[in-house]
Image (cartoon, rainbow, N blue to C red; front, side, top):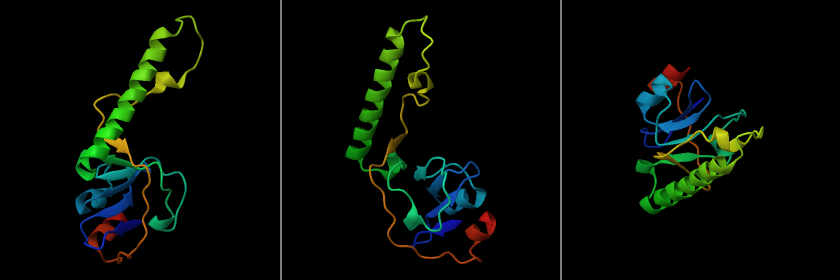
Length: 136
């Protein structure tokens, strides 16, 4: 499925790896993993963007107000530093299988969590729209 903003410049689509992206027409037509906002690993089927969860979305610096982006980076940095500290003090002989070992994202942080995102209005994208045709 593909959806477009009313201005026709922003599109929402699933990439090949099931991330839901909001990007431009070029990214949409190619199904690329790039854009301004995304929802990682969409696991459930949905009929319309208005049915999407409100948490779990990620936003990059160009699409986030500066104070919110800086707060998001500070929160992620704090979590990362705490995980690094826990790993450093853990006993080397320990067989513990900690989630800290899998802390995949490391600074610099390019994406921050969006606390609550809702899509409330939906306009259909016609099948003959080039971005829709490419996505189909």
